[in-house]
Amino acid sequence: MKKNNQIQKYSKNFQNKFLKDYLQESYLKKNFDKTKLIKKLKNSVTFEKYILEKLYKNNLIVKKNIKLENVHLYVKKNQFTKENSSSDITRNILTEYFFNKDKIFFNIYKKIIFQLKRELQFDFLYQKDPFLRFNFPTKKKEDNLLPHVDLALGHPPGEINIWLPITNVSKNNSMSISTLEYSNNFFSKYNFNFQKYIKAYNYSIKKKAEKILIPYVAKKGEAAIFDGRIMHKSLLNNSKKTRVSLDFRILPVIYEKSAKKYIGTGYLKQRFIRGKYYNIKNA
Ligand SMILES: [Fe+2]
Image (cartoon, rainbow, N blue to C red; front, side, top):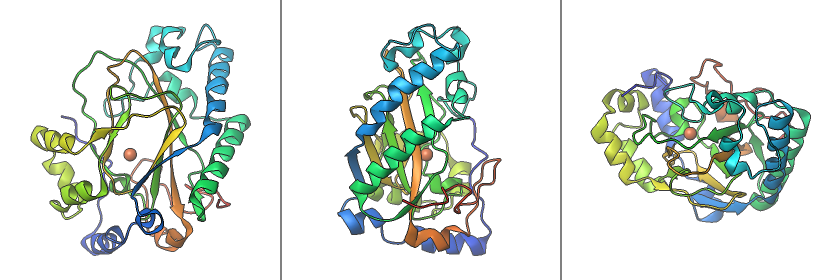
């Protein structure tokens, strides 16, 4: 199994600070008495048409008046749906095409953010550049994706994950997600030291993690909004439909100050501040 080398590695001193931040009360729990919410963000339907038009205009697909979930049947070349990374099943030419987003994309995104704000009713910073992913059907049965929390990748405690399917998602092509209680119990065995977790990670730990993960089954537009300490992982797409999803993170403004201490583990070494990872203006 390939080990992920992008896991946070804090000095002992910082790990203690991290732990203190990590174990604070859940913001969602305090405000909604739940650590996972599902909210319909109907502005996301606009994405469907936009994505198809964009792909068609740029010669990546051969027809545009199709259902987005069938997009794999219309890609111009087969290699467009091939995985470009062994640790990310959603890394392919179509996903990469949207690394550079245009104004129209961001306008739709902002509308989704406004809608989210209306639902949540608290002030938050939000990820400036969200991630649009294509998860194509595959015959593979075993993946080597790490069940994780984004806080293991350097993200600041207090962050909330938003996972928004743009196509309907089933148990065979969605992502899987645990509960805060199970996740905390699971990672407490490693003292929330994710280096320790990754070093120990093997087939038996994978199976244990899978026992506490449940596929998120939803209609398009039904966003999963969950505490950043809830374990999750993409699922191999063993269905006949492409899964398209948007993921981004928000940070209630009360955590802004403590977030400044954190740095992303990816090659970008992201700073979790306004104008960098987060949009300058909060919602
Ligand atoms: Fe994640």
